[in-house]
Length: 123
Image (cartoon, rainbow, N blue to C red; front, side):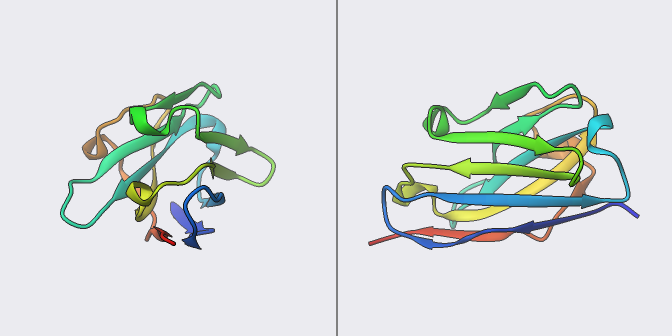
């Protein structure tokens, strides 16, 4: 059974850092793409970053480029999202999701989702 479990969210001050984890089970990461999405109050869910089966990485939100890094540990079957220089506008529930092989910034193309982890950036 495919399962994704996010962790690592919390409350952080502006300029701080968090590392989110997405632990996968029931499938292999090296056959799949994992995307990170976020949902902020009053906004639509947006794609943040994605890593494909070959390890290629993509960012779908210009505001995170240079601040967020997506990576993968195949041995632990876990994908990470390192978030640095956090801003109040990064506040959202962050979700990871999976689809076969290739990345996409469209949430509708991802078949399995985790429950999300809350990130709050505030002083």
